[in-house]
Each structure stands twice: as structure tokens, then as C-alpha cells.
Length: 359
Ligand code: XIL
Image (cartoon, rainbow, N blue to C red; front, top):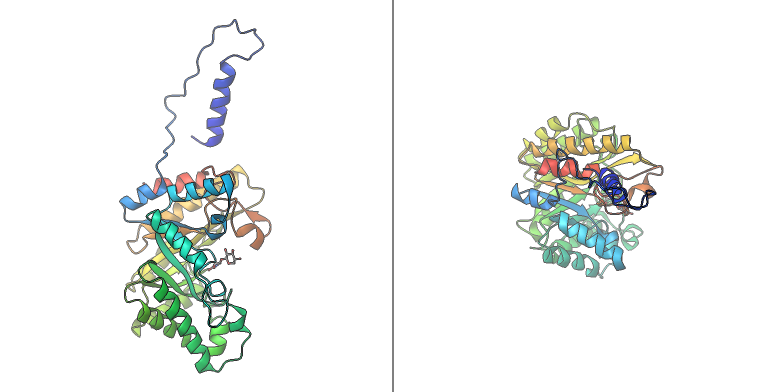
């Protein structure tokens, strides 16, 4: 039963219990729910997920700082539903490494402790990214050898700090431009194309068992960009570079899902790699409508179903979980409501479609 149907039923029941203009003399027939209406399944996502050895997660650090009642509702909803946590920003270079010889782990550590206290795994995001690097790094002047050493030092310090506490790392993030060539950015420009393999090797040296991922967007279906990603990854595997998997960010628009998701997951999995969904959200034009939210729910259902057909796809992380707190409205003006709880923390149709898949 949807929340709206539940409210309608409640209002009907309330109006049947007096308060009407008949002076309260008419016999009251109690309204009972239609026995064919299925009961709402209140089982948390993580309960179903863990029965399948599956991780269902969300990125949370901005909402995590909510205080008061909202803070409690936010964290209670999160811990009830999810068995994996990702820091939305708190593990990025600019957050962790504000000066060349200064690391600041406080916020990230509190997220990791919170995850641990709530029996959740942590995905580490992110070691090497063209965005959100500290300005001391990007505005400095470095030789290629110095730049490479700075990257390796950062990876070594961070992976070592979180060793045993993080299940897998996004080692390199968004390394391809939309046309499939290597994306220009501080690492490519200052170190050269070898930075990718070097980053994986440094991460592996710091932690012999943690999962190591290449994470990107617009690589979820078959496309020229995902063809490039596939070639790049196949080449890393052929060279023995320690890569564990590929992260499909999965920032989608309802009704415009990528094509051939199955075939794409299949080819990456066939390289012996994990394929994880790492930043899922499915935005709709705002204000949303019941039609757009229905399409969104179908898209969530079909996408998770595709993932779950592959043993290699055993992680799906949402980029947030409530429409109250999401990067979408400010990044894609005119869009929003991309997640599975509404802004009042009520489950949306998209929640129930993920729940039905995980069941
Ligand atoms: C986004 C965060 O959600 C925002 O809060 C921040 O302002 C910018 O970065 N791909 C990624 C994530 O890999 O790190 C990005 O996160 C979203 C796109």
C-alpha cells in the first residue's frame, strides 16, 4: 500500500468514527481494510540484502551532520536500511589532506566508527580524482617525479590509515572524458598516463587485501565511452595491475536509462572483475509527478535486477537516500527527487521496487 493509499484509508476510517453532521446518532460501521490489499513490507533493505550476501549502501556525510530530530530521523533511517556506508566528500583529497604535511582524518574516522557500530561495511571514496583536490597540490609547481611521489604518498597514507576498516577503494575516479580519451586533470597533466597503474600499485602495496576499483560515469551501458573503459581495464588486467573491479556510478535520468546494461556488466565481469554500482540515483524533472516517480521506480527495479543477475555485482550504493539531502538539485538545476525516500523520510515507490528485488 502506498503512503497516499494508507492516508486515504486512515482518513476514511477517521471520518467513519463520528465527527460527522448527523449528531452522532447513526450507527457506525467500522471500516476494515480491504482484505485483498497486501500488507506493507516493513523489512529493511539490509535484511534482505544480507541474506544474499549483498551490500546495499548510501553516501551520507552531508546529512550525517544534521542535528536534532532531523539528525535522529536521518541516522535511524540510514542504519535501519543499509549495510554499507560511503563518505560523499569526507574521504576526498581536499578533505583528508589540507596541507602537504597535514592529514585530517577526524570526519572520516567518525563515519567509519559509526559504520562499524552499526555493522556496516565502508566503501572508500576516493584516492585519485580530478575534482576536490587540496589547492596546495593543484596550485603548486612540480616535476613529474615529484607529482608522482605526491600521489603515491597520499594513497599510501590514506589506505594505510583505513586498512582493515574499508572494504574497497575507488582508486581512480572519472579518468575518462566523455569522448573516451583520458581526461585532462592534475594527475594526467603532471604525471602522465602511467599514473593510473601506479595508483593501483601504491594502493595494493599499502593494503594487500582491500578491493581496488576504477570508478566512472556514463560507462554503465554499451557506448563509445564504456568501450574505452573496457579497453583500458582489459589492458590493466593483462599487465597484471592490481585492479579488483569497476564501479558504475549510475547517475541516471528517469526514462533515459542506458542501453545494454547486461551486456556491459557481462563483459567487465568476464575479465574476472567485480562490477559494483557505486553512486546510484535516478533524477526526475521537478516538481516530480506520480507518473515520473512511477517511471523512476521501474528504472530502479530494472537496474538492480540487471546487477543481481551477476555474482560479480554484489554491491549497490545510492548517492544519498532521502530527497531531503542530495547533490542533484544544485548540480542539475530543474531536477531532483532522485532517491528512494522522500524529503519527509517516507519510502517512495522506488524504495519498494528495490526492496522487491532484494527480497
Ligand atoms: C559530489 C558530491 O555529492 C557533492 O556533495 C560535491 O559537492 C561534489 O561531488 N561523482 C563522484 C562523486 O564520484 O564524488 C561526486 O560527489 C558526484 C559525481
